[in-house]
Every structure is written in structure tokens, then in C-alpha cells.
Image (cartoon, rainbow, N blue to C red):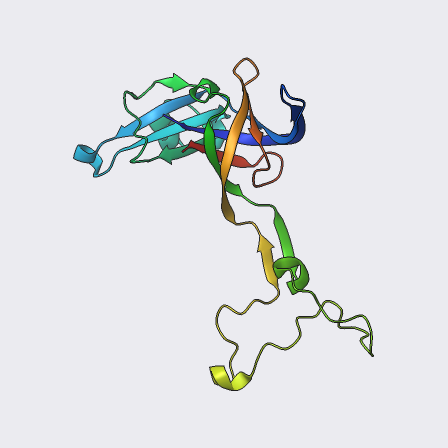
Length: 205
């Protein structure tokens, strides 16, 4: 099963055998426990529920503790028809060794929240010219088109200022550089979503 949960730690750089440097992200991966194995016959689809991360019992509901047979921080369900989780049983455990250096992966997580931002930062607009009487419109959106085409309303989907970040994003075409089971870490080439401590879902492709 090519699936695991991890928390983003920090970024670093790694040199390969030819001396080529690559940006990399350190992801902490604690041992996982399988809490439920779903099948097509009993649940209508095949999936595996996993938990990880020790947690105080007082912070976990009694129902969750009973289902997971313990107190854990994170719980997710893995479902992939192309890479089914065959041979997994409830109560089984696994760690970062499910991946190997060179594995192609995709990583999902919640991006950093940027708050309310203008069109220059949010959408990459160029802004107004810094000459010919321009004074306070360097980062303004400019005209948004004739109002008649939308009946005097702003058309849906118009790129404007608003809340930025805090969204679930999946980054594809990544690969595993190193696997350190002793230190419970994965080294992933490139950048992944989120800040330090963000929960990441890492899936093999």
C-alpha cells in the first residue's frame, strides 16, 4: 500500500552522486495503525482507514478511542482502485518503509492562509502604469468589462480581490529522495503545501 500520513517539518537541500543539488522537504512520518479495512461486499467500496500520532485520551472522544483501539491525532481513509491495499488487516502497523527512494508520489495538504489579498498578489495582475498621472492605482484591478454583458452585475468567476490560501492542494510529479525509518522521516524532492506542522497525505502513483 503506497499511502502514508506525515507532518511537514522544514526544507533543505540534497546533493546527489553527481553533485547536483535539489531542494527537498523533510516530512515526519510516525508509525501507522490500520483501524478498519472496508470491502466492496460489506461497505460498497474498498478502502483502508489508518491512524497515527499519539494523543492524550482526554482530547479524543470515547467513540473514536473505541474504534481506533487507542488515542491518535490523525485519521484518514485511503482508497485507490489502481493500487489496492491488499493483505492489510485491522490492527496491522506500518511505517515509512512502504516507500523507497525514487518512488513517484503526489502530496495533498492545506496551503498557508494569506488572508484578504488584492489581484496583484492573488492572480498575478500587472497593475497600473507608474507614470502619466498614475498616483494611487499601481496595484488596482482596473476595468472589469462592460456591465451590460452581465445585466449590470459582475460576472461569475471574475478574478478579483478576496481570501487567498487555506485550500486543499495536491502537488503531483514529486519523488522520494530518502527514507529514514530510524528517525521516522521522508525526504521529498521539491516543495509541498502548507506551513510547518501541516498534515500531508502522501500517495504513490
